[in-house]
Structures are given as structure tokens and as C-alpha cells.
Image (cartoon, rainbow, N blue to C red; front, side, top):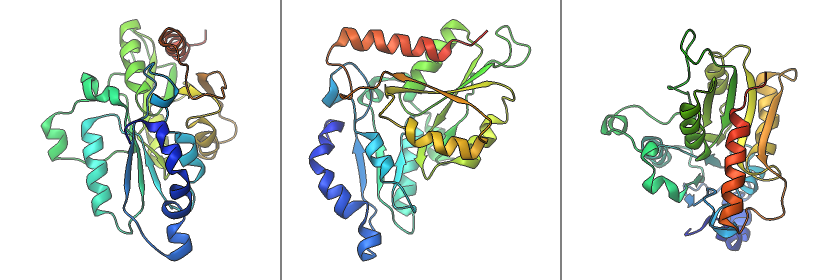
Length: 253
């Protein structure tokens, strides 16, 4: 799809034939949908592929939803999709910014070895005893905003680790638990560029509760709830994005 939100025009086909085909007619499909999704200040239709709608349709392993953030992750995801049995439809969020974002590039060695990782650890997070101190906050996120958080965290030397969920469904609970084990006692937040009533937050919060336990609090950081996926103003977008990143990286005293 050229722009993510244009998937609205295909929603009937998605609901009737792609998501429910196996349940209705025992018909398997390995269809992969690449939907541009990422808030870059180009307006509502150019920002959202309605990630939340696909997550609502997830159950019983009927589809797979991913938001890869590097070239290697994208490559291994597509290769695994081609080989996977039983076949399942795959929905991939693919921001256009990745086409010119150095942070999303991968070395050839990462393409010729390894595989797809549902959760990416933060290799640049501050370590114990370093000048920036130990990690006091862990930001959970998915997609493009992860690169922006890491870039700003490095500039500000914030005591924050950024963990990226590269796959949202099936939810990678065990992989996330393993990644979080490196940061005992750290504050947990979920950051997303979408308004709070959209994006992945309302889907992942229940999964996080099951994985982490009901006594662990994960605070959402997102744009204010909205009836539109994004602002039509580049100026407003830039201000919102700057505030969002700042809030996500501000550790409580």
C-alpha cells in the first residue's frame, strides 16, 4: 500500500477473507501485507496503517503482526514467512523513513547469519559503573520511535534502556521477560507515537500484565487521545514528537 491509512478501503476483504479464512473454510494463506506506518508529519493518511485494527483481529494464531526496525530483521522476517508452516497472513508496518535512516541499516553479516528476533535488546544502554550510571527506566516500544528514542537517549546520556518489540502478535512474552531480567528494579513505560487510543498500547497492556504480573506498573506515554490518526500540521507534529521523546526519557527522581 502506498500509504498506510488507505488500507481502510480494503478492510472488508481483510475482515472477511484474510483474517477469518482459516476459521471459516480451513483455507491457509501466506499473504504478506506491507503497510507504510510511521509518524513523520505528513498528515493523517500518510501516518497510520491502523495498527490497532489489526491487533484487534489477532486471536488463535490467525495472523502475525510485526514492526521490524532494521534491514536484517525485515529480511529474516520475510524469509521466515516464506518458509513457515502452517501458513499465516503477515502484517508488516513499514515506515518510509527507513529508506533514508542510517540506524535501520544492517551489515551483510547480519543478513547471512542469525534470524528474526521478536524483541531487540538495547546494546547501547548504559552499564553499571559507567559515567551515565545504571539503567533506571526501561522504555518499551515498537517501530520507528525506537530509533528516535535511542538517538536522543545517547545525546542526553539518560539512564534509560530502550527495548523494541519487533513482533506484536503472537506476543513474545518469554523473550520480553528475558530482556527485562537485565534491568531489575527499573521503572517501566510504554512509548508510542500514535494517540493513546490507537497504536499498540491497549493491546499490549493486557499481555504485559500477564507477563510481568499485576503488581508491576507500566505507564503509557503517547499522544493525547484523538479522533484523527495524526495532526495535519508539520509544526504541531514536530512539537508533539519532541514532547513525546522528552517525556519518555525523563526519569522520575
